[in-house]
Each structure stands twice: as structure tokens, then as C-alpha cells.
Length: 227
Image (cartoon, rainbow, N blue to C red; front, side, top):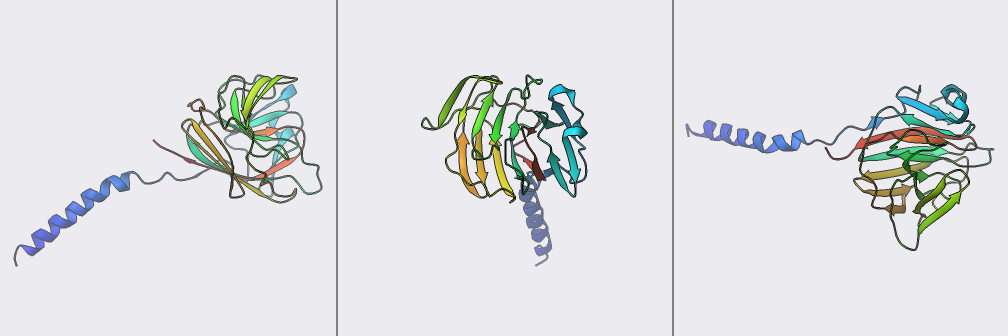
């Protein structure tokens, strides 16, 4: 019986050794890109060099844009693979227009946009995926679309949404965006709306567009994937 304490100690040490790798690989903590109070951690590009505070403002825990001039707010930090949750809505009583969530911004501003992949927020087209200025994206043949000679953006391509899951204007929407390596998956209000593959794998800022009219955001939360 005098060996029982020793055996127990060995078993305890072995259990701790086996648990150590799991503890070391704990899931990363979510990052609140929008703190609900300020634009800390963000910068902006606006056509005509308008100041950030002329286009974007924080009121009552909500991030708002006027939609004019065109441009985008973008994170100072860069991210490669992640899960991104964005809660947004068209303000009640305002005609819904256009916006987007920009992913892996890879260049300096080119027009009111830049090299990136967009998770579309345009009213009626939420869930479309577009690749601008040389960015790559592939998808199901029946939904793959090429746009040539666009007035402002030239040639670009993308993948149309599978289904419409957008809430009514004035109601909050939840966009769940998973960008993992070369694959992109979009869920809107809990429903799978699009998938794309063949994306360029690189780290870049995340952006929110100002494109024609007011839109509001109340949550922009990112959880990194992988190492």
C-alpha cells in the first residue's frame, strides 16, 4: 500500500502532460473591431478627401455612415483567416441603398474601392460575393458572373447569392462571414447564402463601405482562425 501515493502522483502528472497540448491550443478570443464608443482602430478613404468624422460617426453604441461621399472605413490591423460577425441594418424610414464588407484589402485605394473581395450589402443583393481589381474568387458555374466595363470599377467578377435572407428595412441583420484560407462562406440571419473558393490567401484590413446612403452597424466581431 505504501506505493499507492506514488502511483497516484504518476497518474496525475501523466494526466497533466496529456492535457497540456489541449490547453496550449485553446480557441482564440473574439476581437471587438468596433468598441461601441469610438472609431479607435479604424481609418478611412473617402472620395474628395472628406474627413472620417464627416462620413462616419458613433452614436448610442451604433456606427453610422451618411453614405456620401463614396469610400470605405478600414481596420488598421490586418487579418488573413477568420470568422467575422457583422450586425447591420438600413435605418427605419430611409430608402435602402448599397454598402459592403470588404475582405483582405490588398492595395492602396484605386477608386472608391480597391483590390479586395466584398461580401455584398446592397439591398436585394445581400450575400453576393464580388472580387475587384484583380482579386480572385470562384464559385458555382450557374451563379458565377463577370461584369465588363463597369462605369466606375471596370471589369470584375463574382458569385451571386443562393437565396434571399435579408431582413426588412429597419430590422437588424446578422452576417456571419467565414474566410478560411482560399474559401469564403456567408450566412445571413442563420441561413447559408453563398460560398466561394480560389481566393488569394493574404492578410489585409477589413472594410465597411460608404456607398450612397445611410447604413448602421452595431457589432463587428472577429475571431482569428488557425495559427
